[in-house]
Amino acid sequence: MHVCQVTFSPTGGTQRVADIVSEGLGAVAERIDLTDPDLDLASVNLDEEDVVVISVPSYGGRVPAFASQRLAQVHGGGARAVLVCVYGNRAYEDTLAELEDVARAAGFCVVAALAAVAEHSIMRQYATGRPDDADRAALSDMARRIAEKLSGPNADAAPAGVPGSRPYKKAGGATLVPKGDKSCVSCGRCAQRCPARAIDPASPRKTDAARCIGCMRCVAECPQGARKVNAALVAAASAAMKKACSVRKEPELYL
Ligand SMILES: Cc1cc2nc3c(=O)[nH]c(=O)nc-3n(C[C@H](O)[C@H](O)[C@H](O)COP(=O)(O)O)c2cc1C
Image (cartoon, rainbow, N blue to C red; front, side, top):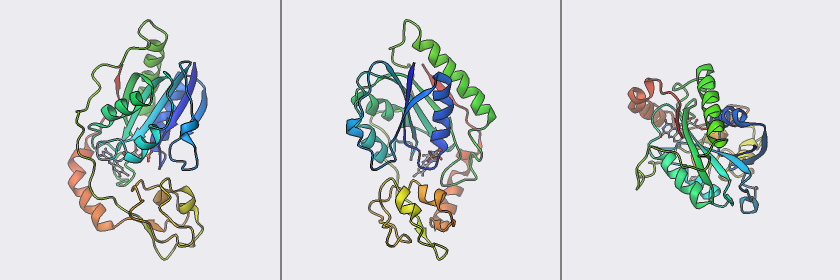
């Protein structure tokens, strides 16, 4: 099996889940990083020999708009796609349904879909440390079941029962825009790693709010811990989501 990854993972949680699933299918031959603004996705041509694990986080119960725009540029060429939605233990609502539509429109043959939990990239107190050993075991078993389907007579059949509604829920509210504080030493890493090019390397404490997608990569990767979002807004959002985030959610597979 020629296994490829197409992944949007600003802070690494989605990537961790994608790795467990794809390694369960076989050695990963190619990795396409949707966060890389320099990657010419229109020149990516996949074909029927490929099995592609397409992984995105859920933002407000939807595929991040930036990720769907990037994925839409890839030529799926009839490659079989395993869809992976990763969320922070609140809910993923219409993310898988939307991802299914975007993947089909890009020419993929969708054969499986799964949802799994990773640490919440804004409110780190939710789903801390996930995916954990139990997730790993469940996801590896799901990969085994997907591989079984791919080697059987129904290899090209669409997955049944993928949750989500169409039209999708309205895309999320205001973007939380991180900024650099006084401990910023202008190393420029945030500007270099920002998928949306929302940070000017010449003045990295500022963020272009019109471009920022609120993905938290700059916060996660700042070596000084200098980049922060508005603490009061995060505290309010954390309180509002406490109940929904507190009950552990398990990985789900649709075949
Ligand atoms: C802007 C934004 C919106 C999010 N919305 C949701 C959500 O609706 N439900 C949820 O459970 N987690 C949500 N999360 C958490 C992420 O889906 C989760 O932490 C995911 O693992 C992040 O992926 P990454 O580590 O690959 O960046 C959101 C995170 C961000 C940054």
